[in-house]
Length: 124
Image (cartoon, rainbow, N blue to C red; front, side, top):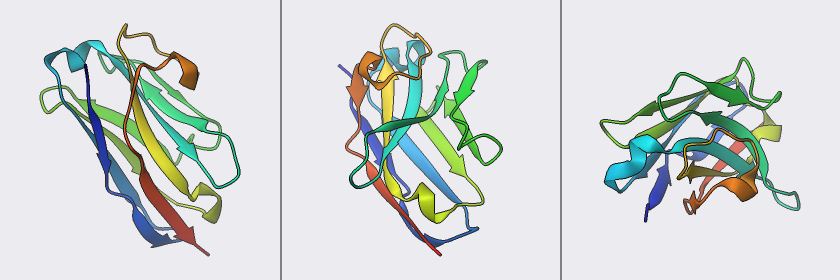
């Protein structure tokens, strides 16, 4: 069993940056692929970014490419999402997730473990 706890959300202005963190419990975390998703009010949860268990492969949603960077520190059992040039449309609850088989995927239904989410609000 893995527990994920996100932090780092907040209220920022358009153009600002934020770094989200996701701290994981469990010794097998380095074997898991990890992802970030977000859900805005009234909308479905959507994929943002994912990184393979060895950190060499990444996927990004088109909306995140060039602005967001997903990284991981397996020694610290932590995943990060660096978000730059934030826009009002980035406003959402951001969730981190882990895939226990280490499969890199953009599909939320394939992830096994989820955090509780952290709110990001970008004002114009």
